[in-house]
Each structure stands twice: as structure tokens, then as C-alpha cells.
Amino acid sequence: MFRIQCSGGRIQGLGGRAQYPVLMELIVSELRRIYPYLNVYKRKYAYKLRLSIAVGLMFVGNQTIHMSAPHFITWLAFQKAEILADKIFVLSKQFPPEERFSLTDQIRRASRSVCANQAESYAKRRYPKHFISKLTDAQGENYETMTWLRFARRSKYINDIEYTNHYNDTIEVEKSLSYMLKHEDKFRGEFSK
Image 1 (spheres, rainbow, N blue to C red):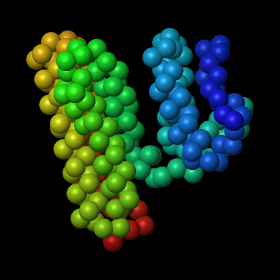
Image 2 (tube, rainbow, N blue to C red; image 1 turned 30 degrees about the vertical axis):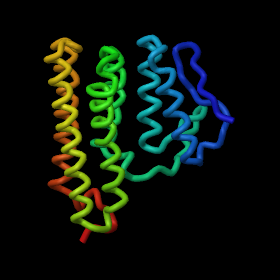
Image 3 (cartoon, rainbow, N blue to C red; image 1 turned 30 degrees about the horizontal axis):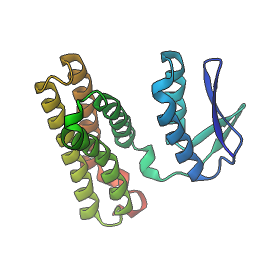
Image 4 (cartoon, rainbow, N blue to C red; image 1 turned 180 degrees about the vertical axis):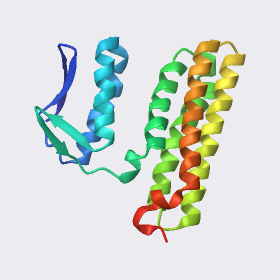
């Protein structure tokens, strides 16, 4: 059994076997569930724990246990896109109910699809054209997220500061994806050339 404990301003995992990748998913899902209820001080630790999990490390006491994780999780573009998707989810909660099945749903799907397309590109890394195609799809979903942010601002669901912050995050994801497309051999690993 594994559980997340928040006490004394620290978030730590107790129990469980850290060598299982499923454990990583449990931790991330639990952090997503409790994140809105944490104060700012505890959020910093939650963010650090998520980044540690993303690169395949688990800290138990003073020991660092390496967990097996798919390579795409370590990509900077994936990590930035995942954080952006979480931010978009929180932001879209303030949209009005009549937008539930249109703007809210579309912006959430687009932002999450950036990560999903990167995962698919990793699975198809053996085939260069498919790899590039999926990364291009990830770029397209990122541009779609930008577009939905513009609609949210035009409809006055978000203010200019929220728009600018989230739009800048999409630009960062775009820069990372563009780098990946220019240097695709670095990300295809053993299947390059």
C-alpha cells in the first residue's frame, strides 16, 4: 500500500515498492487530486516530488531509488506540456457551465493531447517519418491550446494576466517541440540512423 502524507510542510511517500512504474502513476494522480487543497508552501514540495517522479527517481528517507520510466517522460517538452495541461485544467474550472462541452472540453483535450502525441511519437521512434509526424501533431495541439486561450480571453473568462502567463507557457512548449524536430536523432535514441 502506498500513500502520500502531507505534514510539516513536506510531502512524502510512505510504504510501497518504488520499483514499479505503476507506483509513479499513483503518486502523480494523488498529487493532482490534492494539489488544489494545498497551501503555497506545500505546493512547492508537490511540484518537486512530481519532477522527481518524472525523471524516474523516488526519495525514501536519505536513499534515492531509481524507478523504470519510459524515456519520453524525461523529455523537457513533455514535462512542460504536462505542467501546462495541469494549469489549463485548473484555469478552465472557472469557465461558465454553458462552456462545459465546448471551450472547457476543447482546451483540456488539446492541452493533454500535446503530451499524448509525444508519448505516441516515442512508441513510433523506430520509424523516422512517423516519429516526426506525431511530434508535428503535438505542435498542432499546442497551437490549438493557444487558440482556445485566445477565445477564453476574448469571452472574458480569463483576464489578461492569466492569458499572458498561460500563453507564455505554450510558447515554451513550442520551443521545446521545435528543438526536438530539429534534432530528432537525439530523441529517437537507439533507432536513429
